[in-house]
Image 1 (cartoon, rainbow, N blue to C red):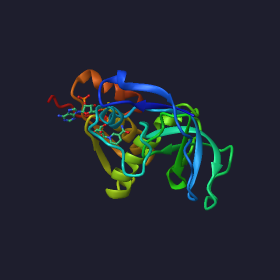
Image 2: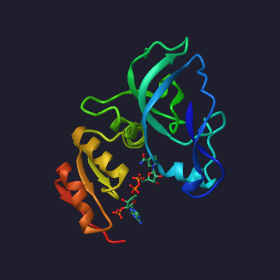
Image 3: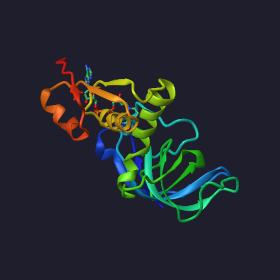
Length: 193
Ligand SMILES: NC(=O)c1ccc[n+]([C@@H]2O[C@H](COP(=O)([O-])OP(=O)(O)OC[C@H]3O[C@@H](n4cnc5c(N)ncnc54)[C@H](OP(=O)(O)O)[C@@H]3O)[C@@H](O)[C@H]2O)c1
């Protein structure tokens, strides 16, 4: 298969499309034919050499992707060949195929295209695990989102609203509030930093 390889630490020019070995799945993994992937800050840090992939993870960048399941390990029952999915990856999204533990695979949300779903797992898992699983934000409570116009912020606003939470935001510039307005936030608090 083809993959984007970090040939040495450096600027974007060190990224090269190369022919590499296909990934092999383990019993609890699925193989995804990648439709789309996304760019996270960690990808650029990895490219610069300051964020090595975790032990055992793919050496190629790409921390999330969407695509179609090509094969499933013998312990996997949740997914089948042909399913359209998105996935949180330890790496390897910048390739034609990626092997990923079945527990890190998600269905494509309804109303979201397969391509757009590639940018869903990182932000969704980050907001859900921190705000709802760890902090137990509950319906009826108030929720202050600093940096409301950010990638994490815009997603947190929507999830909060969806959960029946009263959402407040801050932003570095008044103009950035405009990015939050489509989400129909009732109250704005602005801070300059
Ligand atoms: N995006 C993801 O999927 C993801 C996943 C895991 C972890 N993270 C981490 O979550 C953080 C945010 O990521 P992001 O993707 O949302 O980044 P981003 O879109 O670049 O937004 C960063 C935000 O930080 C705000 N900010 C900057 N300086 C600030 C300050 N002094 N006080 C308060 N806010 C300040 C900025 O707000 P203003 O624009 O209003 O100045 C900006 O909107 C990063 O640390 C990232 O590594 C992100």
